[in-house]
Image (cartoon, rainbow, N blue to C red; front, top):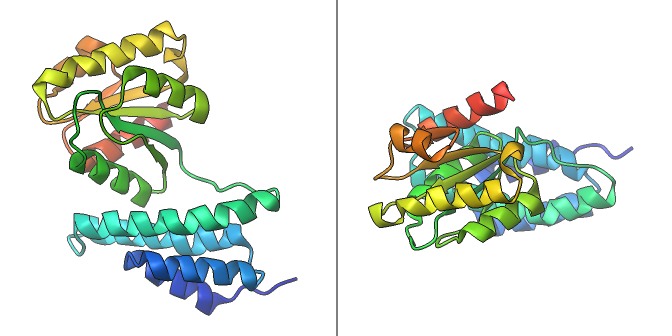
Length: 219
């Protein structure tokens, strides 16, 4: 039985917290070379690091930019370690899977990326579809990734209707009952969310994380 190299995992956790993607990549490969359980590396280094930074952010000891950098670094490590985990017949345990994107016609990325980073920092698996995402792509993503929650963002009042159109297309595809849908963005409101049939609305990143937790606990 291979003993866990605590020093190596500690270094990987620190590199994740520091948002050092190059170092995370290097250490993730060393984890595999050392014969360390890759699932343990994910849980004790990558996820533990991102959760620790999330707590620092909540306490005012870190910035949003730190979370985004750490989330990017974690993705690098996951991309390397996931393959090894699959080879061993294992699976990473997340608190839930979220598909998120900015709706068609809107190319604003910062707000969505902040929410995605906060969700990742809270232990959720996030599939970020990017910006200017057409309704059909959300439908395809539900089929492809079977998420627990779909999140749609918009910063423009002119593209708010795309949130409604996307929900309608998800219904037409017979997928509405499979997922919870949340929306957000500057022009949106809780009333708008109810009007278009969303399950929830969040005015900011912290509220989005709490909303996701409530919806998943209610499932």
